[in-house]
Length: 185
Length: 185
Image (tube, rainbow over all chains, first blue to last red; front, side):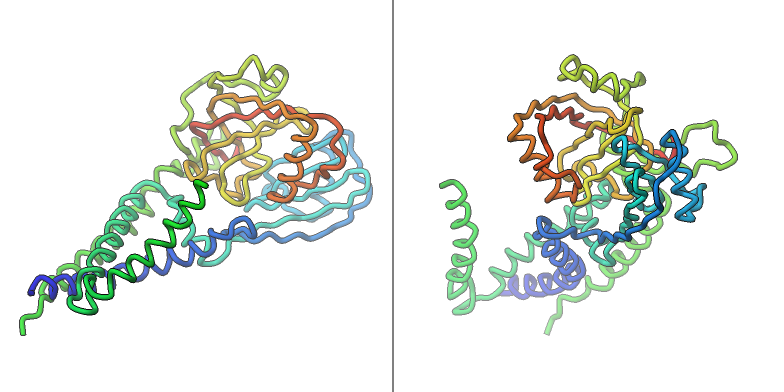
């Protein structure tokens, strides 16, 4: 039948268009799937320092000392916070932070770095952008539905859905259904 | 043989045109979840920068100080409040909460949103946040407190040792509906 030839052609070309997002979402899916074990979007770096006991009666004075001793640009410092009577935190741009015990001056300079590629694909996949991207993602989801259905019906005969296809579709269905049944037990 | 390919060229042209438009709009108007106001002029510090807006934004005009909220949290349970403060921590995995500092050492309150509803950037630490949401209080037992501290340590690298916990905690949380992030107060 002619309609199958059309379905195959459209399936193929929609597939081409969807390649980039399928790869991006798959990559992000793998990364985010293991969010309990790692941070899929950022890496964290820590550097220890020892400034000696920090002078100053107030958090502001102590922060000024820390900024001076760590040779930080005061104009870049966002602020400071006394986590406790003995622990001081100084905030820097890009999520950096100096955290130290004012009694000993021992502390850590923590930096955050975006994971190249993964940060961007996660932002797309998790729809952190919101706005127009929501509609782009909706179109992509509809395209995936089309690819699934058209892929199922675009062949006929032994290799079609009514041939061996139904068994493969059934096997693919059994896996999630099995887990859902397990979930409710 | 008839080839159903005549639609390919117009589709490609449409896709390229859309991509061009998307690039233009991304630079001209940021996404809804993170609206950035026109860059605040460095020569006009008197005007508070509206900053980035998240969720439904902030509608209340009267601010409840963190200290007032923490002094008698039960009096605020279920009420919608506006709170301001320096961001001292952000959920490093999902960007689904921020801790806002009060004026006293260690004084902070957690602003929590549903995962994915709003995503706060990890590099927001040190920025000034204005948030709005409903106050919730959770009184933990000593055992629950230790479990909570252990979870914070495992999940977010918090430095407090669960073994050092000797008193039960009362967790005061703001279930967020909207927020603004500013570079300065």
